Length: 192
Length: 199
Image (cartoon, rainbow over all chains, first blue to last red; front, top):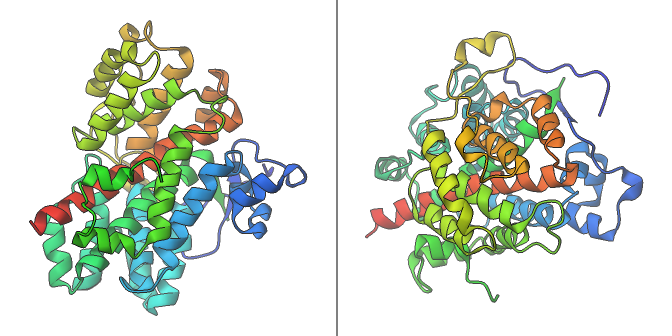
């Protein structure tokens, strides 16, 4: 837990740090069980992952779920639009840290940095064109509690050109960020 | 795997169906969503977060999302957990008191403040406190925050859990459980909606 925190007050594509509110495991105390939980050994450098690795089995399963939903680009939705679903969910739930990471990925993979910035600046009602609007709207409907996702979202995704496998990628990507946002928002805070 | 896939079960996905084939293209995600469920509800060590507490929090969290096969599943799970049947009534009462619409809450003071939205700051009813342990009272109050207003979370909320007897490791697993259920309930709802659109 660092001494000085400088929290961002707007959504941004800049790189942010993240500071834990409770004690992560010290690097020196990590065992093989913990490294299995981290999946990537390099994550031992991250305060966030050294906190979550207090429950290594849950972290390992969470990480592998995450990686397959976003990185497995065999078939299905292009990576850019999975990242868009993650960024839109984070914008709507209010996770400035998660939104920064996934807005950057969405920009990198789509080459539409200005549209991504429009989502961050104007919020989830920003007009980003039919296909992106449908992805954002579906993500927002899934993030609402009670869940507002319905047949109209499926219709809109289909008329925007998504097939069922791609729609499932939207559902998985958006749903996953309802998991990630809640951890990032409640266990610590972002810092510039 | 000995335990049937929980998401397939709750959606009603039959082997050989179109959705079964689509989920099959993301096998690592499918298997690890299942492993997440198992590591949260059949953990190798429940010392920091008891099975009864896990079942009670799960019934509360999924119930707050409204009636669904997921909520019924976790309510039944609570009733079937040792000591759980005695809590069902109190949890149901708290679900009824805690239901609202989210996400709401405040952003860090600045340009985003115009998006701040007020809403219920839920506290467990005094009448339910006799049935629930102080740890569980603190857990339900924090779970409600995570479900409906996660952007309101502050370091003082961590202190409240620690003060109620939660260990740091227990807080991590508890947070994972609420966050995981927020994922699971949405995947199930989304896939059910898609299945119904194709029926």
